[in-house]
Image 1 (cartoon, rainbow, N blue to C red):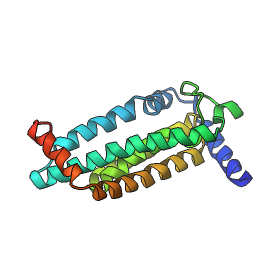
Image 2: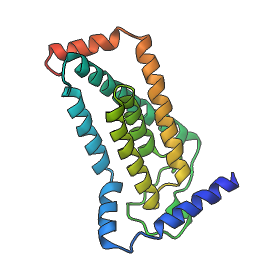
Image 3: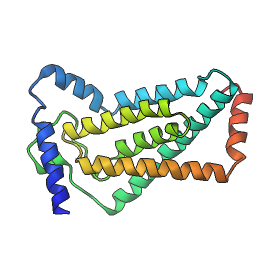
Image 4: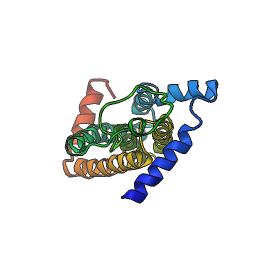
Length: 196
């Protein structure tokens, strides 16, 4: 455990040394690390994917992927909330003198909720479309890395969050297959109401 904490510390300190040195880099980082940019971009992407597709079959696959992704996001959030009730880890900026490019969160650093949520979303999409899922995986990785750079998470927090998100997404996929035809009925109802 000490070896992991030592690696976490070294990576955070190495990445954070660049914070505050370059004004343009800091502006970009503040945009990426925020609670809004990546989540809004990902949400808009899901809305686009929900309605996109060359034909009815592809639209159905996209909508199933979006449904899977959204349900996985909810369960990933719940999982992190439950874990945070039983384990608390201080943030890197509390333990070390870092240049903070983000407001100082007070909740547990482990596991990283942003990583759990975005990787759950990406995994849900990946199961329906590798190309679309890869885009969301890229956003998830960028957001996680930016949070480490900004001094609010350790790398192991982000990795744990990502693993939770991926695992939850695959459990959701299994669950949706088990309760079929309910997902099909939900999608059919959305189409009847012209929402899909």
